[in-house]
Length: 289
Image (cartoon, rainbow, N blue to C red):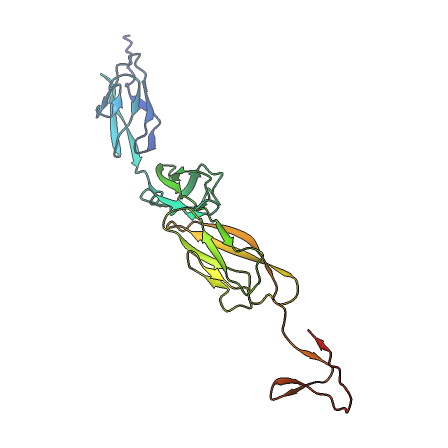
């Protein structure tokens, strides 16, 4: 009796059986068979490294079907799906005054919704995980926006935030400790570029309590009495970038006495003060201020 041996068919297998990657990424593909040979060939070969062997790295730029072959064996195929990366946009470069915040206008497009936003550095942001946080940097800072889409694919973008220069508000005044009916002249010594000024003389009953002049003068006419009175004068200096600085100085003036006459025998007629005494003897009038 003759005995016959039936050879088992040789087939190629590949793992993983399918794969998905983000554009610019790669995936490892491993081929195997019952044949001891590892001389597998891969096609298309332009996007696998190396192009032969049992283990390769596939890095297609579009969704691709690979065929892996081995002489004498049934070939196998594997589909590598390529997802497009989202496009991150961190917005336009901007600037901010020290101590203030500015909105970063981040956004994303492409890829697959929903998006996850992440900003760095995060320490000076109101919220590092939203599209448009408020940045309050302490110095010139470049922020990086990273966007992850629903497939885990990534897009990045950067934006620079520059610190604006701050003016220095300062002034002097003359004369000092004068009577309140004498104007005080203010000399502006502020420094900066494109400056504008807001003065408040701390004299709210005056009709000229504020001024936008560079070097104004003010008469503290509301200071009435027999002593001194102190006024807090405030200068706010703003430069062309919108940044401001404030200077406050105290001005002391001597009050003007109220010249109102009254006393024994005082009467008023038609709004005027008169003094009278009905007597056949000498009369004494007493005046008070």
